[in-house]
Image 1 (cartoon, helix red, strand yellow):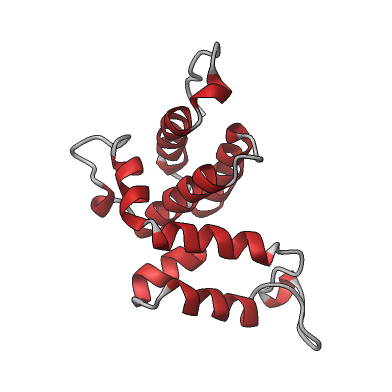
Image 2 (tube, one colour; image 1 turned 90 degrees about the vertical axis):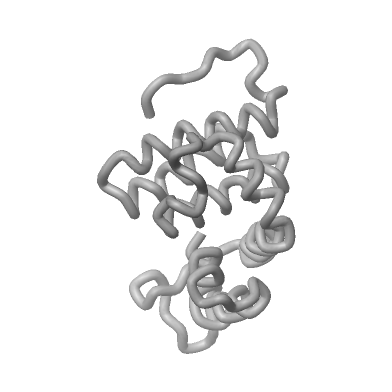
Amino acid sequence: MQALFQSEQSGEPAEAVISQFQRHRLGTQPGDGGFEDGRVPEADVPFFSRIVLQVAKNAEEVDAALSRHLHAAWPLSKLDPVLRALLRAACGELRSDPETPARVVINEYLDVAHGFFGGDEPRFANGVLDAMARSLRGEEFQGQARRRGG
């Protein structure tokens, strides 16, 4: 999510941002610290790269998938850029990682949303992600009613 945000804000290509994250934020390098130094030592770098590239290379499709689940008064371009990056990352993961159950993907991104937002944004994200997951992976939700709240 942060890499997508950085790419959008800076205008840098996804590949350049991925490279920066690999050098400065992901995994461990000799002499580099861990979480306390802003690194994510246990990061799955290939998975991270795959999601960022999937979203970047399929940006129009990802945005179209998201836009189908947004109210006309709140187009993707009007959303907070962090929330937009979160929704794009989640959409990318839902589209490219069928092995992770959709509900797990939703819950992981809701945890992230709660870390960044204290208002209604997590609830908004939950509604959009639930609708999008049902659209992209309907077979996982067959026979299950839609959850309220979140």
